[in-house]
Image 1: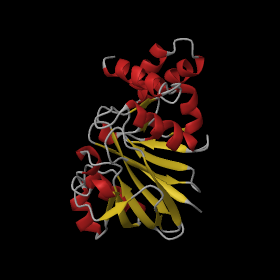
Image 2: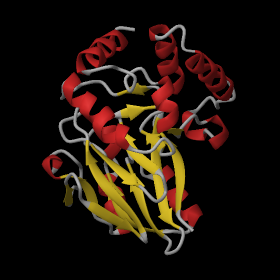
Image 3: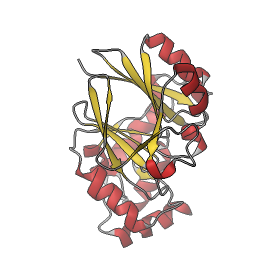
Image 4: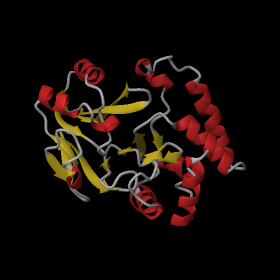
Length: 252
């Protein structure tokens, strides 16, 4: 028994997640910009939504919060400092807080950099972290509201402290393009080259419309262990090095 995790393709390349406790049937929705595909997935799972969770305020991670909160009569959670930016915000979270989805517990990591109030939901027993746009497979988010120093802390001291077996459920299907850049940064890294080949094979099967994507077409989740070998931002030596790599990615 544990945590059921459903990946729901939304918009053009977003991942929304519906997670449910196998024991109680209680569920949470994470980072939803669209109402209909999420409700359809919840209905197909036969679960009861008790939480609507946002990792950060960007519309493509929170736009459907008001409709979902009303439809399921569920509170909306996000970082306490984002109360004025997350739609339908009702419950504030801070570093070290925990919340229960049925009998599954998540702890909160405060990981600002992409935005000033970004958080991750870490389910230790399920070996899963939902990290929005901070850590991607083979990449990291743009520094819209933070600094390289903040991103280095988020990736190396917060998310990077999780075990290698932790599954990384990020906010977008960016893996192929991120690995192309990673191979450019580390041309002699054979692990990156091998993963890029595998990811290209997966994405070659992709449906014309992302909303129609099946699990066989998805490259998420990865694991922290994979990221340590293939992600140039987790492999950065310090904040200055990360900032240099992020600047290269921004213009790549």
